[in-house]
Image (cartoon, rainbow, N blue to C red; front, side, top):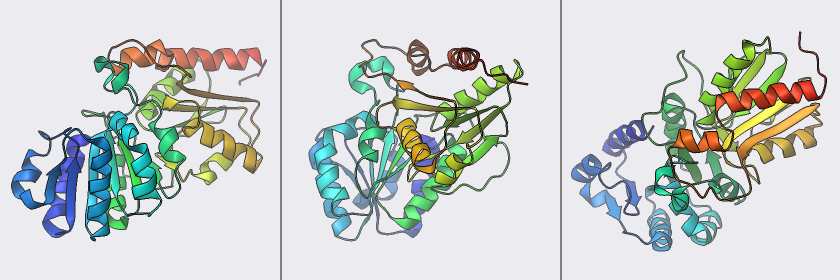
Length: 311
């Protein structure tokens, strides 16, 4: 996703003289081409996360179209400034966070981003968008840059597999049905969408029909897609974020508001504790039961526990 985003930025900057990029001493090698082409529109504020946001806010107030790029977990150091300098003033800044969830897990727990969706979602005026693959990222990023509304765009890292093999309409706030099914509904966001599809394959092999929805927009959540879960016996959410206050919580809140009452509802995400181990994204996710095999087993066990008959 990251390389696709960089290529798009380089092209956008050619036609938008007000487009500027600000980084926080992360990704400076990634932006070499941008810096060479547009040296007066590229700023590296160094390791100073709070100043980073203040600098971004100042540029936005001067009428610039600002992209603020950082590793996801480092945005958490700036939450007060994001709240006061950006959200309170409702500035049209695009915050791009890279490495959501455990994508930087090899560098230890300080580099994990397991609460950013919850924290950003809680702030007024902030849209939260979490694409599943480069195809979604490309369409969503283009729209976000056109609209210039305060948005947190959370990316995985790089070399993310493409899961959309057919043309599809992708817009902020509108989810995408990846697979139709009738027994179980899985609502997933970000990189977990590809794991949701793998889980659906495992369940299909056991005769369970699974609907998979890519809900790339965490806020505002797509209420229509959640309403369409009405009638499903079991609904599951999947995210690379704590289950407290994140994507799954948003779905649960919306279901209660809409009167959607599945017999089974479960959120797959990180528990309420810090992962005090290091490793790859796949290794760490599996340790917390977020791999396809583990999630499929939990879903089957949930169905059996409730004595639900699946044709």
